[in-house]
Length: 112
Image 1 (cartoon, rainbow, N blue to C red):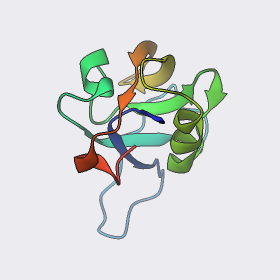
Image 2 (cartoon, one colour):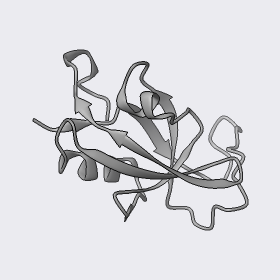
Image 3 (tube, helix red, strand yellow):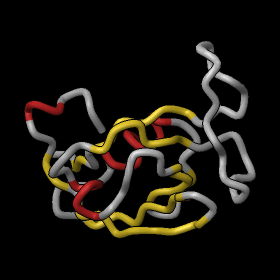
Image 4 (cartoon, rainbow, N blue to C red):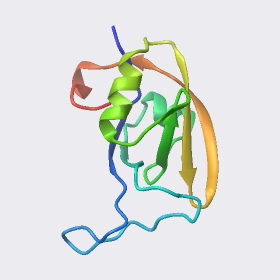
């Protein structure tokens, strides 16, 4: 049984997206290889730990997160009940939180 973080994410893009929207990037973000949380599942591990939509994830368990699939790869190496440290940027502040992973509920099959 794999661990579950309970987030949906997409790559951070410095260029405008197709619809003209632009992500306001914090000054502390030095690279293009990061992901932004677009959804934090209510009652899921990430939400319980305090992660929010708009947080930019830069690392989990000390491993850099360059693409959304990096979250999946890192989390699938963990089990429910494991604690993982998530490094992120919120506004212009670098921070980290310990997240206790849960078992992925059936209703969240496509979510990380």
